[in-house]
Length: 533
Image (cartoon, rainbow, N blue to C red; front, side, top):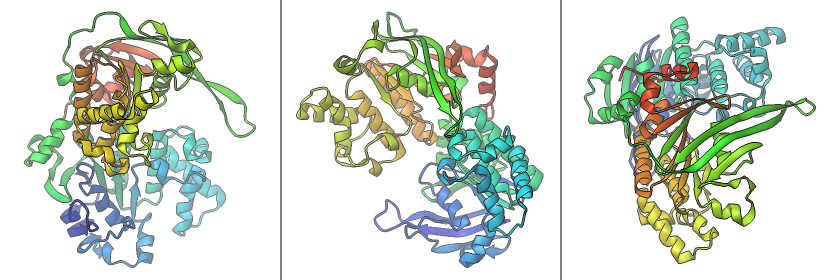
């Protein structure tokens, strides 16, 4: 069905290497699922975009090779012919549905638009029925309500299903899925993966699935192609590559997949008075649907309590919407809870304000999920890391020295001080966010999904760094994640959240061996590739 031969995509002059993709040759048969695996910058997504005729408008174009789809070279097709193929014969699921979907159009209209563009003549009622049927095929509850919603009114998993509905609307022969499950909860991820396999089997679609996670590969792949620095380094059946990897890079990627049961070793229990005590925390939001809709109260956090001692890490695990991030923001007082108590070293910070709250905030700092969005793009890294000490009265020279020391602690050299955030990779930006949080020498660190969107090798580096920093500085840490594998790597205890409540709390080894709550059992069962790697 698809034959890529000797594909070269040169990078602009002064790039860190000459080619984004170099001499790539791959085949995909009808009804086959081929996983292309590699870290960020390996050329996976550019290969997919070259097949779609959607290379970024940065002077990037294929300089050699061919991409044959059912015998016709896509690189030689005129734009009009490529537009006719795209969506009808070849379709793509993009990594981030929130940016791929039009925020100003209802979901149903965006799906229906595809029929109109490709000349499928349908009456209004028939079009509405086709859209609802597509959404129902993807197991979305209340398809008519979803069709009438805007993208921002849906969860991440629901938006990803809408993207799949658009991609499958015209029953394409070839489907390209670019990291479609990277930032999703494990249960939602498993649902999406099973759905893709189901649609593939039913319709005989060839699937090119791009990922950096060998857990996902173990779950769905027929064959695997491993890319590094734009080149193919290994190819074979899923069983061959997973069980007998030949290339060192492949072995590194497989070794970086967290293995919860093996790595969840019992450590020494923390002792002494709690540095952080959360008691009966409650936070409810008011939601109004439409301009004149009735206001309703939505509980986000419901009576959450836990204690954390110095040097201890508590992982809080749950799906999107379980209340994890709201809880973290209430703890650091970025949100004011409706009820309950947050005490640091025995002092209730709920009644603090002004200078007293500001002084206490030195004790507790936060690392945010998206380092790109949380770092000021117009400030140099040195200024970003210095901001905390400067705001708390330190002199400029002392603040600069602190910033340099913290950047060194997280593995960045002093030259990083003079560069801007966009000049760093995702993993390096996360290190900068950590350095900023540590600059005030806190006793408690709140890390909100700090590795969810990172490659597995970079993820492993950041997790190791967090453990190292925690040991050196004696930090207490609340680590928020949707991935039980990651939680088991860093935590002394794991608290599982569902619908705003902690439903289970245990050591990692106890949680994986004998999960008590049905929700915890569902999370454990949804870990991709569990037992296969």
